[in-house]
Image 1: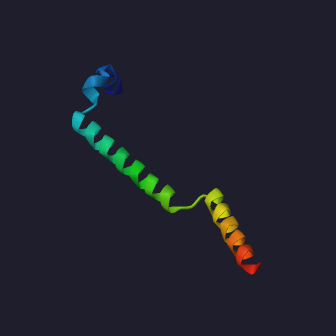
Image 2 (image 1 turned 45 degrees about the vertical axis):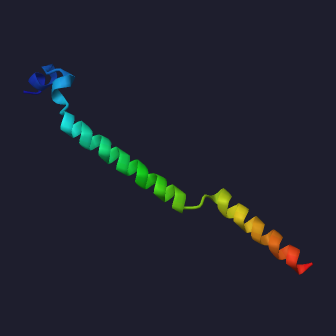
Image 3 (image 1 turned 135 degrees about the vertical axis):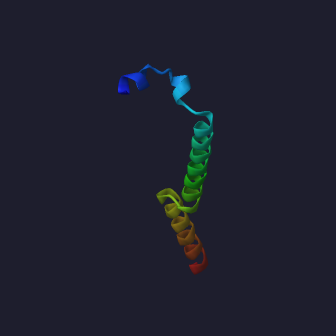
Length: 62
């Protein structure tokens, strides 16, 4: 049975509907990942914001 399944060409084993669903799922995952990365500040962003706050505080203490 496994040998018979392997003998079928790849074109016949992949269903277009499944491919379309997979593509949509991949797009949704990538969009969600981009949203998470956008919402989560990186260490560099946090450090830059901290440096800006420090510079502003020093400026107004003078």
